[in-house]
Length: 287
Image (cartoon, rainbow, N blue to C red; front, side, top):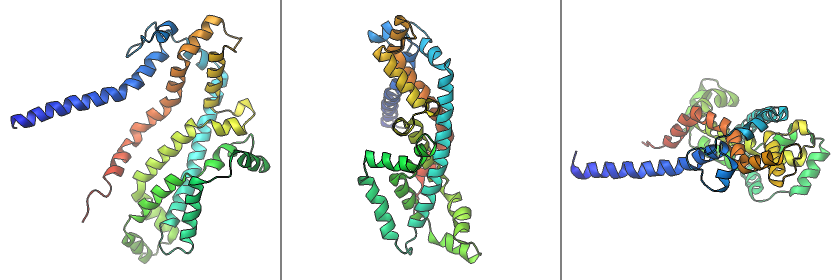
């Protein structure tokens, strides 16, 4: 190894280490703030480690049975919505990926049109209400069942697959559904895992649809619960808490909120990361 190459490795390691530190610092800082005292947070003295260690806000949130009920609602909404979204997106993208499909251009145009234009908030509310979906699971799931961006990504992925594979399947007697289930989907694990994570994160973090269509507090997702907790703490409207407790919660509740809502997705990501790596390398080797 030459001297110049060793210098390059050292410089490269220093730069990459700096990038990693800059990337991780916001997450570490949020966790530290969630366990810190309000006076240290207000003075900006919390960096990597908690100051004035406390778990007041965590205890306040996690001791409330409403929190766990709303957390369960979020898990239910995310799972059901993600399954339905992936089913619709996968089948729609598979159909659009077939060049010989009649009306293919019109179907693509309809999908792309919805990326830029929609009926508006009031018409959507009237539609959901007229269908009797308010205060139900389907008010959260159905209006956002298909992301056109994810649809187009999957369509492009299916189009890049060799047509000879399905032709061979057809020769062996596979139907269109057989080709989809036994050839296309097993070869599409990377894009399916990626789109599943995208949908799951979107539904997990969603709160506006629930805020708009749900009136029953027992049906709220955890994002609505935490939003109301933030509003009550920062506004000083929660009269059930003492003033010092309200100040404590107001000081670090945003950090606690981020930790509680992001933790499940952060825990799931390592299991899907290998599919991201596969997705990045797909198509890198030609010939």
